[in-house]
Length: 217
Ligand code: SF4
Image 1 (cartoon, rainbow, N blue to C red):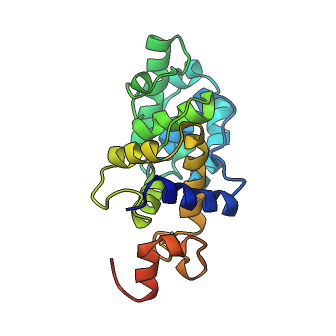
Image 2: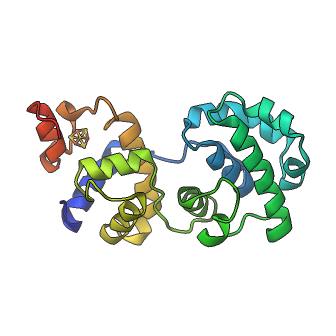
C-alpha cells in the first residue's frame, strides 16, 4: 500500500500530467449541475452534454422541470443510458427541491442524498463543484486508479476508497484530486488498456510493473 507521502507523490505527478483537469459536465448553476450529475450515472459525460442543452433550454428551473410531461423529458434524454428511470428521477428531484428546499439545491451531503437519483458521489460532486465544499467523489475512474496504485485495498468499498483518500490527501486538495484522478483514469490509466509503458507513475505502481511483466493481478 502507498503511504501518505507516496500517495501525494503519485497525485502530484498526475497534477503535472493533467494541470487543466476539471469537471466536464456542462451546467450553468447548481440545479443544472445536480441534474447533469444524476444523468451521468453509468453514462459518459459526453452523452450527457449532448442531451442537456435541449433539456435545460426547455426546463431551466426546478419549477419548470417539476411540471414537465414525463414523455417530453424522456424524449430529450433518450440518448443517455437508463433514460426512463433518470427522467423519473430528475422530475421527482425537481419536485422535492421545491417541496423541501425552497427550490434551491441544499448544501449538505445528507440533504442532497435525500433527492431521487442522488447518491453520495452526486452529493460530493455538487458540493465541490457548485459550492466549493471539499469532498472526494469516487466514480469508476477514481476507484480503479486508487486500487491499481494500491492507495487503498483491492477489497475496499466505494465509501472506504473515499475515506482512505480523505485520510491521505490534504483537504484543500480533495476537489482538485477528484478531477485529476478522473482525467488520469479516463485518458491514461484506462480500464482496459492502461498506458503503463509510458506512465510517469510506473515506479510507484506494482500493478503497472506486473502488467508489463505479463503478470495478471
Ligand atoms: Fe495505471 Fe499502469 Fe500507470 Fe499503474 S503504471 S498508474 S496501472 S497506467
